[in-house]
Image 1: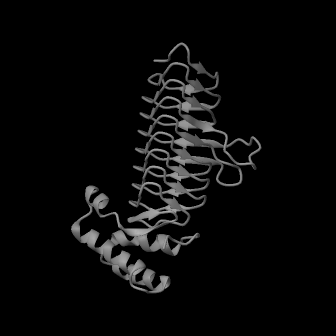
Image 2 (image 1 turned 120 degrees about the vertical axis):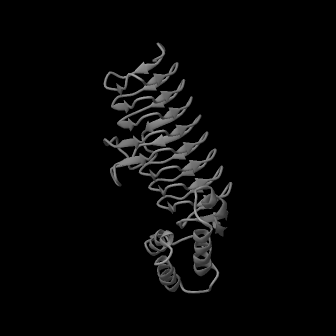
Image 3 (image 1 turned 180 degrees about the horizontal axis):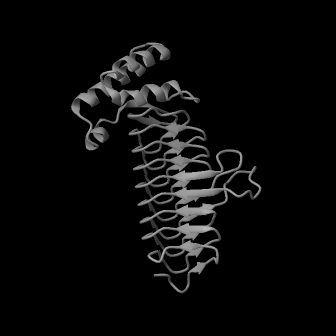
Length: 256
């Protein structure tokens, strides 16, 4: 299960069902769960905790020091859940002491080739980051979001659940749930109706989300009034609760 050319640190903890490919490097304080497979020439540094049934492909760099000039070797970590796929050349860095001290990845995510997840990011579950999509530090990605290829996200932004960014989008503000964005800088283009249908949202729910989008972006209402109207609609359509709360609590303002 472990290729003889792999380099495994003495303090690394590997489940007996872990596979390690040729010339992979597993550093100090790395823990890898059952069924996870590490490809050839991948480099994992710790402290890093990786769950079960993940697939890390060749030349990925996972758990490396953060790219932050304030980082001075403090003991920070990376935590990765289960059943994630991390493709060739992807880079995922540990956290910094100035924030939460860790980067956290959920479960069932797909990180395509050359994706970058910077320090102190939090990525939820069922997220897709297409080739070369990149997150600045301190970014939060909620469940089921999709970032198209070469999407770039400014530090401290939040990307809402079920949102979708088109290829090459440059995101400098928060992206509310359910929204499709495009452009440089990114602007809203409607709701992610096809994605919602694929995930089992009813026609009634999608219509309610579309009406909420119109309140937010097309009605000419002030933001506070639009949030209040969406909250009123949420009494009958609970799927709107997360949208109203996201917009109300945005610290960077939302894409407009």
